[in-house]
Image 1 (cartoon, rainbow, N blue to C red):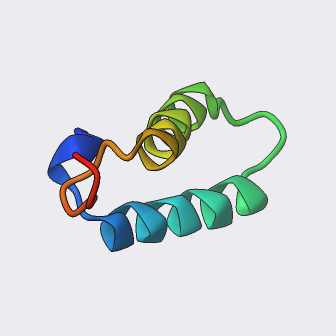
Image 2 (cartoon, helix red, strand yellow):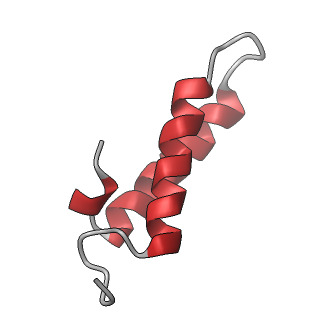
Image 3 (cartoon, rainbow, N blue to C red):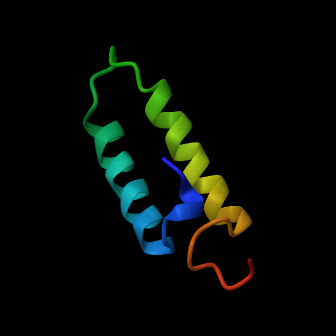
Length: 56
């Protein structure tokens, strides 16, 4: 997964899907990889590091 190759709306959609996955996950599931990917996407949005960012 490379956020810099994704558009803002693609990243938003993935974050939404991650949110649903984590809500429906059982307590004993390992979500660390999912959390890492989610953090990467959130960082990309915060830093404007995505394909259709106007400030690149």
